Length: 266
Image (tube, rainbow, N blue to C red; front, side):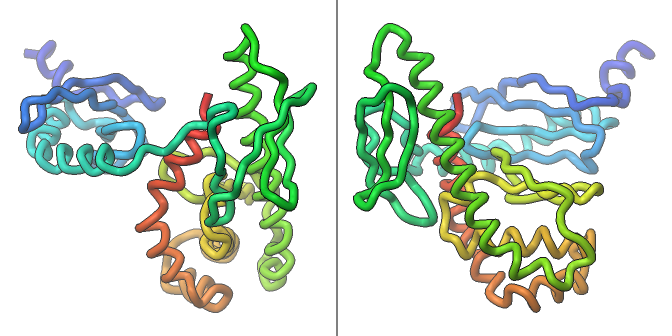
């Protein structure tokens, strides 16, 4: 009995633990679900994104309860996975083939040029990707293309934030300690206790007003760390159209994140 209890009631982990479990869907297909035991989790949660299905377990949740939760939500999971597969797949960056890149809510024409080293420039007729001729080291060359594109997006995002920040910093208790751009799986931005601001790089792919709203949202957390009515009052006073941008993320956010991962992930 003690051994069985040990298997059913997991010891509290100090770090996030990950493994995979197979689940048979109602149609009979098997799918792998990433199982994550997170000490910060408050409840069992099942989610789906462009990378697949994920089951999050709190520290003291048993594996049996997690399995039961999966079985109870098989139909919901099947519908969500079908929704993802029915959407147009985000195109990857392909040398000489990709002819447009998403930027600030538009599809900007992309032209390929042969050059001595890899670089991406903006010209009057669109973007120009300069790259050495493809050879036996194709894998290394493709990685360089993705790194260059990511650096280009980071520079564009910093340009946008540099233009917006002076308008919103007055009236804040302090400026952000530092600013980072990251590829985030679910969040659009975050503010750490030390005042460091992180923003999702895929924001630069979408319409600028949505990017600006996320920046304002995170800056207002310098005043109120929670999402209380006082916090939303601060957001409203600085960005009255925030509800429109939140609806934009509900409609387009999933595709923005998928597009960035397809373009810059190695």
